[in-house]
Image 1 (spheres, rainbow, N blue to C red):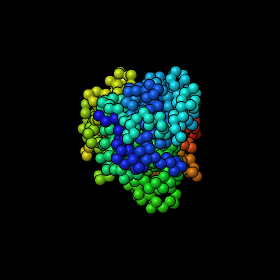
Image 2 (image 1 turned 90 degrees about the vertical axis):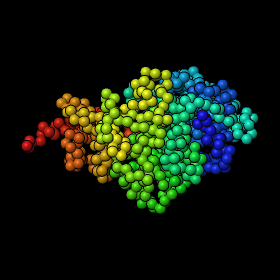
Image 3 (image 1 turned 180 degrees about the vertical axis):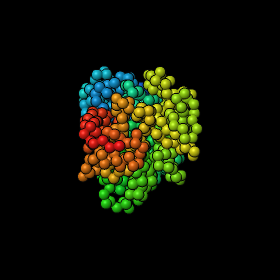
Image 4 (image 1 turned 90 degrees about the horizontal axis):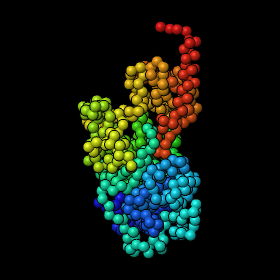
Amino acid sequence: MPNAAQPVWDHAASAPDRAALNGTAGQTWSYGTLRDRAAAVSARLRAAGIGPGARVLLIAPSVPEFVAAYYGVLSLGAVAVTANTMATAPELAYIGEDAGVSLVLGWHSVSPAPAVAAASSGVPYWPLRPELDGLTGSERVAGAASVSASASASASASASASEPGLPVEVAADDTAAILYTSGTTGRPKGAMLTHGNLHACASIFEGVHRLGPEDRAGTALPLFHVYGQACVLATTMRVGASLSLLPRFDPREMLALIRDHRLTTTAGVPTMWNALLHAAGDADPADFASLRLASSGGASLPGEVKRAFEQRFGCTILEGYGLTETTGAATVQVAERATEVGSVGAALPGCEIAVRALDGTELPAGGIGEVHVRGPVVMKGYWGRPEATDEVLRDGWLATGDLGLLDDAGELHIVDRKKDLVIRGGYNVYPREVEEVLYEHPDVVEAAVVGVPHDHYGEEVAAAIALRPGASPDAEALRAWAKERLSAYKVPHLVAFVDALPKGATGKILKRAIDRSLFDDVAADSATERRERPRTD
């Protein structure tokens, strides 16, 4: 099995001058440059005793140097443990100790958290720096050597002149990366993704989206997350296309990236598409004529946002579904096939989707149950947690924890997360259905529906909503509007208005981070209003 870093070396050999990465401020790396810089990192790691199977914690934003460090680690047969740049020192220390890392590589301008975490774990910390004149081994930061993602004489001397630091051969089930889940139910667990997983993901998307070296991809997704790392980066490197990166999502900068780099494909999450819509203003649609494919994942895409984006930009958003545990891939919509709003497409080639009842029975079309995935993208398991692995993996099938249904055409519709289901007075309320309706309101920019404890109903339907600038918050009017479109028990009885909803690194709305106390005052005001209101039958 070729190493997951092998495509970089292959393209560097066949087309060394072809653009591979575009960073900010006009920074461009060819495939030859990327190969040399990945080999330089590899040489430094090898000299420090890092070899096959060793874990290296990598904390960096979406910059070309992340890519060089990442493939430098993988080329050795070592394991990249990638973590959020916003993680605190205790969070990074937990990941580092849980994964048993031998070294921490941290982007030089990230907070001191990586260095502090390394010190608390008793392992070396190397600051990862942007382009320098070479690997400055004499530099010392936090007592450890600094690393630059630049080629150097020392790196070249340690490898052949034609193909520096050739990636080592690996087995398909050798772990390439460990990505830690969000930890919404207990401490985060490290999903082990193999070289075979990464190859399968990239190969599948290459075929499904008909990508080739002439494509120009771009994203502001974090590369430390599975969506950016596997679905975008690995796929782009496999086909030999160029990838333009934004270290941090800003809708105006993203619009400029699409226009100036004449992107043919881009990827994001629903909040990004929504932000692009609101930032586009009177921009000329002709500026985005090169864009033929926009891929959405990470969360459910509201139908209203999808329709508005396609009308505004003239580009279809193809929604997909996947988890960290499935290398970010499981289903996808395809441009040649019309899909219903709410569908996330059919199973990817080589993958299978099943919807099962609580007792494990496979349900027929239309039946709502837990979504299960099987295929070459399913993870090896959770690092150091055989019991947790056995809970979700049986006979190659991964239990996702998501509720969904398969329609008659075999397309998957995600209803909600099992844990997000709201049961109000015995009735099941699926937050996504309610959110879809709320997004149709012209004043609603962001919406998240959650359940809050209720003495009588068990749970009450609550909505946290961000409005467009200048809109007046009016909960009663919003509820009345929703009641015309939803059954009464689905209408949010508690509505809290916020400036913005909490989001994770990918821009995904984090329902667990919504302060439930927001609804305490709303509930009290609502109760007072009901007591003071004249009774009407």
